[in-house]
View 1 (cartoon, rainbow, N blue to C red):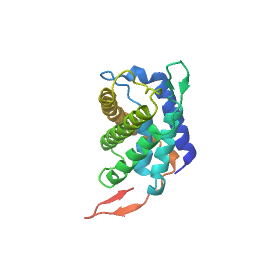
View 2 (view 1 turned 90 degrees about the vertical axis):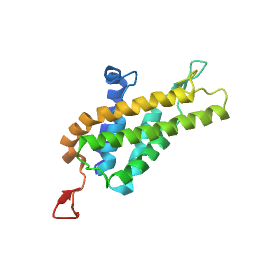
View 3 (view 1 turned 135 degrees about the horizontal axis):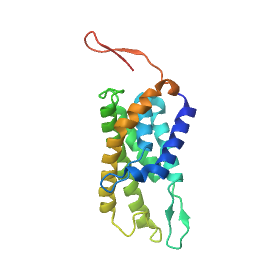
View 4 (view 1 turned 60 degrees about the vertical axis):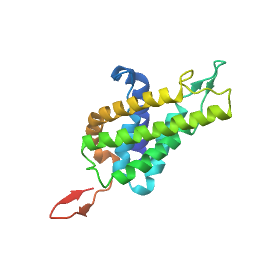
Length: 194
């Protein structure tokens, strides 16, 4: 796997999310392309790098999504999306053997699972942080954590929908990513390129 291509695609997806993501709003939820790129890499990258590459994408998500404090200053908290993406990666890794890697619909399901688990960690860590430091408010304040979780669930569903065409397009660039391919013997006479 070429890390330079992965980093470039992370930056492109974050730029698209920040600039044109609102145009694709579905039922009040703005889908994000970053989980689509991350899951695409997770489904084909070597397992040894999987959690690291997901955490790298989560780190960029944390760095580029600061929250506003009551006094108007910005607060960047590193951790909620980073750890959320790590949990999402740990959930997607077992799915690799169950899903056909190059099928956009199965990738859409993997993005849905990944996004929802990342959102659970994101909301949980902000709730813990709010309990420890009463002056720090999450980005969804004055709403509740349950309302934010409902919003993040809708966002995860929107991510799953938008993942179908996104993964199909990313599949066209597979040779640029440098994923290793090998024949894997499966039951019967069929062989699958991994």
